[in-house]
Length: 625
Image (cartoon, helix red, strand yellow):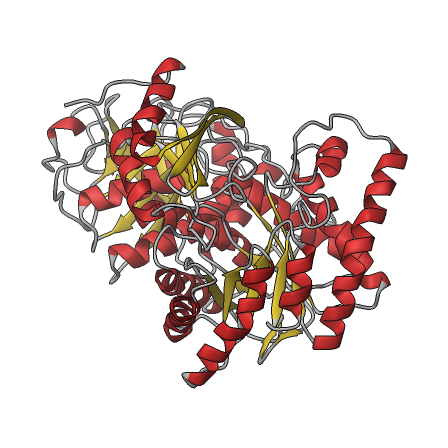
């Protein structure tokens, strides 16, 4: 097999881990770029006018391993106080880059650029003010006029950055595009990339290149495909600026970690990303260990054994295109992605709230939980009494023993997909493939398997399988999500199966459902879009998010956003069904989709009002006892 000429030019290779060749830029005493390790960072949640608390939080992030710390900078007062924060940090004996986070306020950006090492600006609101979501059509003349307004505000800021050796990050967010970009492109990947590129071209015209770029979304699929499109656009424009990665509003706990690992991991796997931030609704320093786990996981892929290249003509890296598969049993076609528990090296332990569709075992008499009684049992063919509820498991050496008729599982690796195997798959339509890997770069190897199937026109269902040993639940959540998310985001896989003998059975099942949900292929519980908080936050995000989850966690498939303020509110709620957004001290506004329904209600009444709103729109169901 050979790699075709259709290889999408957004990364170095689909078959070899290699960092995307970005240039090096400097933020204070830290260099960012492909020649240096991926840098970890976080963002403060304190009031920026509280010098002591903000400085202490910055130091905690740094001591946890963060190389840069971003600080909320709403206005002139906050920008001016960055000097006091920097001095307080220095007085404690620390020296690391501080980054000002700017929305809506070019004047604050100009002040901050004279104090801190890096300034993040949002092209969606740097020059045009607050979005009104009213502009539906735009003429070329109006679009050009808007560009002139951007130049008037951006160029003076760039001159200050040049004078002070200040780096900038041009960071676009899904749902946070300017009215003029929305009118021309809609809230699309193309619009987000165009938003970045017009700012970037102004920087180039003014000989300013100390730049990092980012495009974020709470939707992992949108985030991954759009960052790839940005990288491809840079290649076309002969640019190679460093990329910052993050999934916005990922949430807290295991859901936040899994969602971040799916999105960030899918890009790191292809060598994209020079700095990362895991946005959790937790203390900022709690983000760093998760980011470090991701960074080290992909660093370990360097110099891996070769993977045989194959045709890439069917690959769709910039938009979601589900691989077509036939229906075999309860897998493939229009069936929901299967969850299969691999218990071959485990015992069943603990009660599972939700049952998988199937489980793999070497013991035909394995005792399973009561709510698994309808699950399909997958056992080695030598032990199987075949029925609708029992599927035989074959391996490559057993190919000749596979018969037509009953549903059959064939466990394969990419290297085993030889000519004989391909011919059997073409002839027999009763096979579900269990795709496993022992390769150091299992992500790329499993992707090559799917590409090869597509090249040969084989559309059997494929269950993505991975094995993890000698690990913890916390580590497995991050690594498994990073390993498997890319494939699901790209439309591959008709199910998931994990073998992890250090996990309890409920942990194993919850993890698999969690990866499918974070990858947006199967929703089994309420989806929360929860921002990590910052100095703009107007209430206790962690406790409020927990309270909202306790009251609404049974609303399967519903998307609820809990946002600290309007900056990360109406736009960045993205595709949430309902939004709970800080509107002022002690005040909350409630949204349905992007429409404001209840404005500035007392915080003490807000959760009850949210439930009432959900009920009014017919989306409420009573929780099961």
